[in-house]
Structure formats: C-alpha cells, structure tokens
Image (cartoon, rainbow, N blue to C red; front, top):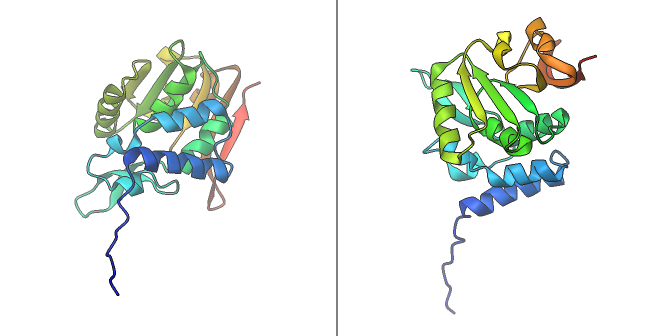
Length: 207
C-alpha cells in the first residue's frame, strides 16, 4: 500500500478576496451590487505590506498597520465586516461628496469606488503616519478622487463641505456639532457610538 503526501496549495490573493466577499454576502453585511463590486475590486492587503494574506482577507479581522514600542497595536484598518456594515448603512450613491473620519486608505477606496469619478471622498486623520500610509495606498490603487487630510477629525473638513455622507470609522463618545453642520440637508452620518460600555454603529440623517 502506498500513500501520497498531498498538501492543499494556499489560496491566491484573488481567491481570498472573493471568499471574503462571499462570506460578507452570506452573513448579510454586503447586500448592494455597488458595495459588492467595491469590495471585490480593492486589494486591501496592500495597506499593510508584510501582513498575513489570509488574515488580511478575514472578514472579522482588523488589519494592523501600526504598533507602539512595546508591540501593542495602536492603529488598524477596520475589519471588512465592520466596513461593510457602515458602507451599507451610509447608502452611498454615485456622485456623492463623502467625508471619512479616521483614515487608513482601504475604506476610502471602497467609498471612492462607490461614488465614482464624479464623486469625491475626503478622509481625515490626526496621525501623520496614518495619512501618509493612506496616501501611499490610494496612489497604488489609483483613486484620484480621494483627498487625504492630516487634521483632528472632530472638526470635520469645513473647506470641502457640505457632505452627502459622513462615515466615522473610529469610536466616538458623542457627535461633534461640526459633523452635523457639515452635512447637507437630508445627508447621513454613520458613527460607532460608545454607549453604556458598548459600541453600536448608528446611522442618522440630518433634517
């Protein structure tokens, strides 16, 4: 009797990306065609060179982009599942002007795909290392309709307002008035609010 040692080859980046998208569809977090197309298009692993490829496309895993001197993770790209939930809540349409609070590049690229060439994305983060990585990633992906700003996201981006949508990717304890004032009438704000020890992503529209 003879046995053959066979080893399943690792999945390619394209296969991992497709599997991630299918997982998000199956659990109901990706529902619209444009969102699905955006997630299938963006090579999110390029936001963290050297990251494990399978982990980069794990629907539940954040993509770590920065650690401190002791090895503690201090900056990351949100997990695909969280990004999908927020993007679907935001109901982003072609041609919209969208503000993202908290940069990383990947989410801005997803949104840029959805607003198209006639739309615009402004992404803001207070950490210059984060915004530098976002600029590099967006240069690789070729998204020219994204403006990256190094600034306190709590102040929004007045010079580029009003916005059709504001998507906040960092946890917030409250909603600064600047975000509300920079929304267009009927615009929508999506934000992960920390309430009673728990975080919930909340979507609300301006009057």
